[in-house]
Length: 190
Image (cartoon, rainbow, N blue to C red; front, side, top):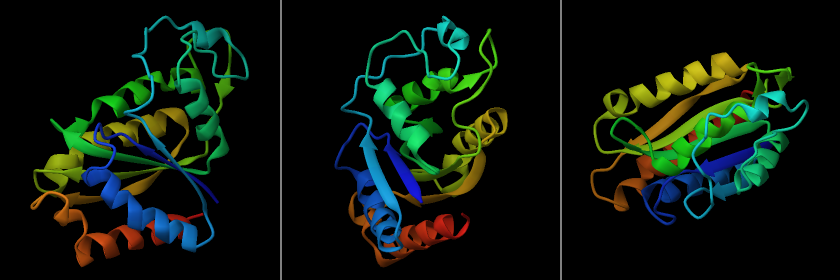
């Protein structure tokens, strides 16, 4: 299985990155091919809403020349996409939001082109947050469920850990074993 982990935290070595480690270790140990892409160090401009991508058949087609094109290649390569993000103000961090807004070119619903470049892939969420559980992650999870439904993707689930002691919160036995169990469950769904 090809797994793409899109790490959307602006802190490349922070809490979300720490929680990704045991999940990716478990996936690799179970034979998955894992690509880890950090978004904060990439140039991903906001979507312009120009719809030019909607008239390009069979490829992404965005007119903006930035790192999103390489990331789209990784998305197309993958069977499973894990959106790893801290939850700020009940939604993903800005680097992840820019990426999600730029998904338009993967769906050809609004112009002369037709089809989807990513339909059928599974999408999961790995989140870190300050507030408790569903209160913190619920709005983002709802948004991702709707994106999956709209895009012909399969929502595969969410694992999250609350920040109670900064980085140490994501190194506890409970957090690490939970991330590994989440990974095993995602791979078992294939």
